[in-house]
Image (tube, rainbow, N blue to C red):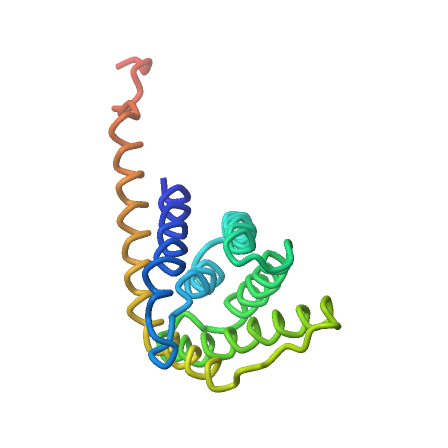
Amino acid sequence: MVLSFLFLSGVALLLLQTTLLSFLPEWFGRPNLLFLFIVFLGTYLDIYKGAVLTLVFGLIMDIFSGVFLGLHPVIFLVLFFILQFLSRHLTINESIYQIPLVALSYLFTASSIFIFTSILTPENWLYWAWGNEILQALILSMICIPFFNLFHWLTTVFDSNSKKANNHFRRQKTGNRYRKQ
C-alpha cells in the first residue's frame, strides 16, 4: 500500500514539475520536486524499496527530459546510496540537517549531470549556469522541511491504514481451544 502510494506520488510530482511548474519564469525558479522526493526516499525508506523506486523514477525522468538514457537512474541511485549510508551513520533525519543535505545533494546531482553530459557530447559547448543552480538549491532548501514532513506524515497514515486493514481481515485468536480444563 505504501509502495504504491509512493509510486503514484512520485509520478504526480513529476507530472506537476514537467507541466505546471515549467511555465514559471526563469528568475522565479522551478523547483525540482522529483529530486526532493528522491532525497526523501533516500532518508526515510528502506534500501530495497527505495532503490527500486529511485531506479524507476530515474528512468521516467530520462524519458521526460530527453537526455542520455540511463544518466538520471545512475546518478539518482548513487545519490540514494550515499543518503542511505549517511542516514545509517548520522542523524540526518533531524530538520536542521536536511537543509544543507538537500542543497549539497542538489549541487552534487546537477554537477554530475553536467559533467557526464559534457563528457558524452564533447562537440557541444555546454553552459553551466551557477546562478540558476544556486537559486534552485536555495528553493529546494526552503521547501524541503515542509515537503519531508508532509510525505513522512502521509506514509505513516497509509502505513497505519494498511496495518488496520490487514488486522481487520486477520482472524483473532482467543486463547487455546484445545486445552483441557
